[in-house]
Every structure is written in structure tokens, then in C-alpha cells.
Image (cartoon, rainbow, N blue to C red; front, top):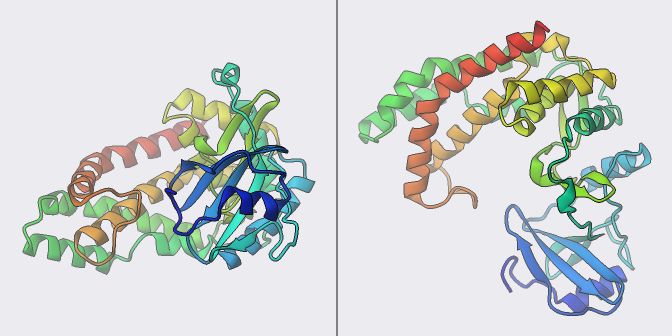
Length: 328
């Protein structure tokens, strides 16, 4: 079966979660940092998720927050408890952790419905679940973007090896380092740190007949509420200023606060671009193995060149958009 090695059978999953009699094999539907399947049984249709690594610590943290979000009334699926619980809603089978939910059907009639108002309200509701009560961006923000000496070392190595993108990296280096400086500056002043879903993306929104549902609560982490709202609005708005502003207006109308971020409102987007670039360069220079999403070596080298060519313009557009948004 495609996906995780030694995947349990559909009968094992059905029995473990008390889902009735399996009506066929697990149908593999998604491959990534975790794999997912659809399971049909005599009790209905279910979404089954398996985790590729020993994720018990993150799962414990995420499930605790997921439980609080459910209690707060966030539009989200209700997990299914195993028959013999070991770690909350998760169970270990064939050396991996698995979870199950009742399947939520996508409603194609909802595809064209504008979710901006819902998204703004939902982000704010999630951000209200667990404020952290301290000042300063979480450590993962700082570690996401390498220090200047690392970038300079990569540039020297790329030039020595005559790598195709070496010149582009040299041209972009001041802009890349400026992103790191902006992160360092906010690291000491961000006062809106919350525990949050951590992965507000379109593929984690199921547009059901009853309305949108926020799924995939495994990436729970702490973040600045305003900076996550800015990044999420940018992603869902597809970079389109009007739609981005509509999402953020709904967030503010629900009680969200964005003003303190000012020109750095979309710094999370800039950070992501630089972080992905750094991960790809590490692989290109032989310092790390490629992640599953990266593709083959040719794909990685092409992606680095494309990102470097686009990066200065992207960063400038983000700053302009933040200025325009904050002036409204």
C-alpha cells in the first residue's frame, strides 16, 4: 500500500477506533509530512491520518490545544477516540501514530463562496483560545532564517563551485539580511504571542454544506497573532490586495489587533520565502537531505534561481502592501 511502510489494514484501523466493519482497503489520498487515507466502513466514511515520525510530543501539545479550540466553538471536526486510548485521540499501530475523524464531504456548491468574513472571524477565535502572556517572537522565528555568516558562507561556497545561482544570491544578500534584521527587531517587542493552529492554508479548509471547517490541527505552535493573520490573509488572498484587506478587515471587526505590526504586517510571508530558500540552498550544497516536497536536484536548482530572481520584487511588494493596509 502506498504511503507509510507497514500501514495497518483497514480492518485494524476500523477495529482500533470502533468504526464498524471495514468495507474495503484504505484509500490513500495524501502524501506529505504525514499521510492520509479514506476509510469506508459499516459505520460511515472516515478520514485517517498517519504520522511518519515519532510525533508523540507534538501530538500531545496539539491535541491539548485542539480540545480547547473545540470547547471555544471553532468550526472544526471532532476527533474520534480510540477504543483503548493511549495518547488522547492518537493510537500507535505498526510503529506509527494514527488518528481518525468522520469524513467531511466537500460541497462543490460552496467553492465560489467568499470565505473572507469566516476566515477573519475564525483566526481571531483561534487566537483568543490561549494567549501566551509574554513579549517576544517564539524561537522558531529566529531559527527559521540563518545568521548573516551562514549566508555569506553559502555565497562563498557557491562562487567556489561556480553554481548557477551564485551571482543571484550575491545580488539578493542585502535584502535577505534585512529580513533577518527585521525579525530580530520584532523578536523583542511582539506582545501578542498566542498558541495557534499554525497552518492556515487553503488545503486545510473543507468547504462543507454546513460551511467552512478548519482541519489539520497537527502543526499547533506559538506565533504573533498579527503576523500570522497577515501571512494567512496574504496566502488566502492570493497576493491580491483587495481580498487580503477584506480578510484582515473581518479579523479586526471581530476584535483582532494589527496596528502594532505596521510595515512588518507581512513579515511572516517574507520570512517564509527566505526560510524556504535557505532549506533549498542547504540541500543544493550538500548540507542536508531533500525534503519530500522539494523534488529532484534539477527541480531544486531551478527553484533556487527562480526564488532569487523574484525575491527583491516580492519583498518590496510586501512592504508596500503593509504600508497601504496600515494607512487605511
